[in-house]
Length: 130
Picture 1 (cartoon, rainbow, N blue to C red):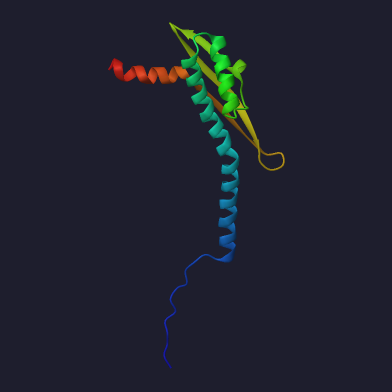
Picture 2 (cartoon, rainbow, N blue to C red):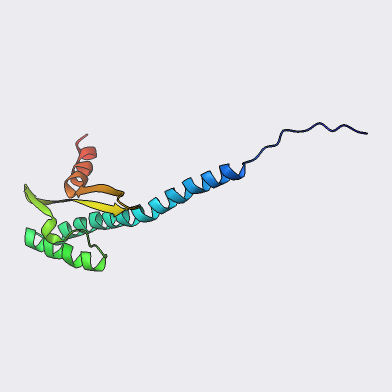
């Protein structure tokens, strides 16, 4: 009779697999709830940049943003929520809002979003100054 050496078994147990799948499922659900809000945030950033370029007065910038918000499915803020500040001969447009994402029962996720065209202007000016 031949004696076979038992090689050590490797792999994931059933309980380990269930635990890993539960973690992956929680991350996937969280991602499916957060990604749309981030996509909307990026749309808002593009819309304020376009609105700034399209308008020369705060009223024009707000109305331009409202038109782009209708097309871009932006529901979190409106033109009235924009902070428009005159910076020399240019306008700086900024926004800030909170998005509350319900998760399970009384648990929710609160994300603070903010953006401005002023940072983009400074970033473009920095390399030219050096």
